[in-house]
Image 1 (cartoon, rainbow, N blue to C red):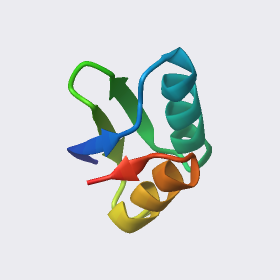
Image 2: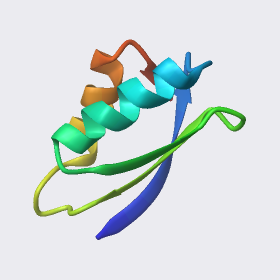
Image 3: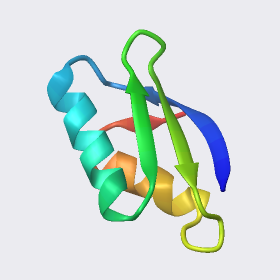
Length: 66
């Protein structure tokens, strides 16, 4: 399992948290949003999903991974 922290722009409320964490859960990725730091800590299996896919899923929710 790999654990990384992504900087994500555009998050501001509980809806943002639910949207991102829910979308990540659908692809078997554990995500923990931190609104104060504009970050998402993700834990994932590199054999199951790529970092690019994780970023794509977050961006599909309307947020920008930087």
